[in-house]
Amino acid sequence: MVNAQRPDRAASLRKGLRRRSELLAAAVRPPGRGPAPLLAPSKTPRLVPSPVFVLSCQRSGSTLLRVLLNSHSRIRAPHELHLKTIQVRLTASFAPDIMGELGLDQRELEHLLWDRILHHELHRSGKSVIVEKTPSNSYNWRRIQRAWPQARFVFLLRNPATIVGSVMNRRGGAVREDVVAEVLKHAEGVESAREHVPGLTVRYEDLTADPERETRRLCEFLEVEWEPGMLDYGKQDHGPFKAYFGDWSSNIKSGRIQPAREPAPDEKVPAELADIARAWGYLD
Image (cartoon, rainbow, N blue to C red; front, top):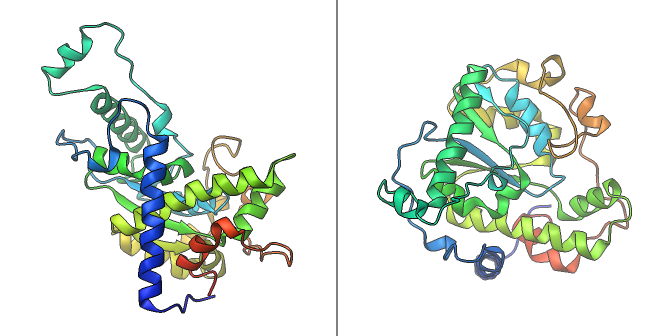
């Protein structure tokens, strides 16, 4: 459903979402790391200067997007890398001073390591463009942008009601209130990034309904020629489909693009996600 709200209402809505996302970023920031939105971009040269990051909620079709892109001869889209969990620890009291003389702090050392991982994977694949799609990137985008000032972003959206329903169906014994809060955290991160950085917005529903059109848009954004083989991802090896690597459902393992599931009659957008749903065009 297309969002038909007045421009002044839309601006007010997006301002409120942005403010809540900034407050969320402050709440989840590790102690002593400083105000993430104010950090200056890194000036250290990168082996991979312009990687691509998919920002999405969980259960939004990011694994499908990954395997379609990974089927391109020039694009490497590996399984979820969870870069923010890969950290550097300085084990001696004098180590910060030693590294400081090189212009490196702990955060920048981690950025160098992350960059080396992406370069390793590109070299291993023989391709020229790398796409990383871990869902937690959605609320880690400020640090990603600092690590790679020339990073490119793809915003993958899905109906929030369907996201919540999909998570509930996947997790046995899940508490709906907790799931809604988790989805909201991811969604507000995505929307904050859409407000602050340029990128390409793709809807999961559109990707499954017209994959050729959407993959053509993606290829244009990534500055590569579209390849029809992208749509037949089942003919290529994309690594294991298992927990923590991405989606491992029978749909993705089928090797075929499956239609997006429509929300069930009782799957209403939770009140907590209504503003996001309106901003994304899923509610009037």
